[in-house]
Length: 110
Image (cartoon, rainbow, N blue to C red; front, side, top):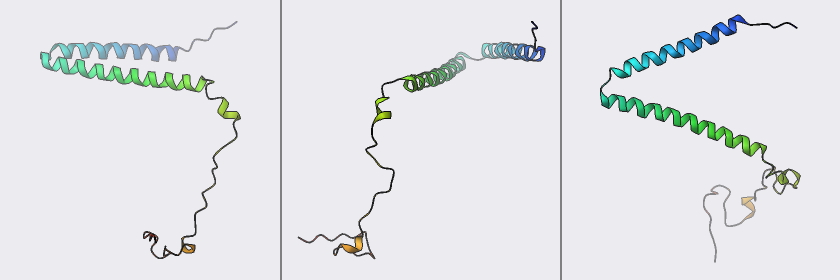
């Protein structure tokens, strides 16, 4: 049995972790230099970003639950009640009160 280790992958993963840690450290140093009002803005923005991620994860989870659900399986066996064929339209020229030249005008005789 042989174990193959991809050192390039390990190296890239380690670089990403280091880069992430470096960015977090730089961000914290920068935040520490901001006035209180700006720190509040940064906090609000990070909460906004996190809520977007949570919303996206919730939506993906909901889509997966719906896809895995058997609640609508009965529709697969149902006969189609609708057709994908275009609806046949009336020939407007056969109706005496509508002129084919101006189909927008409809005259109703009582």
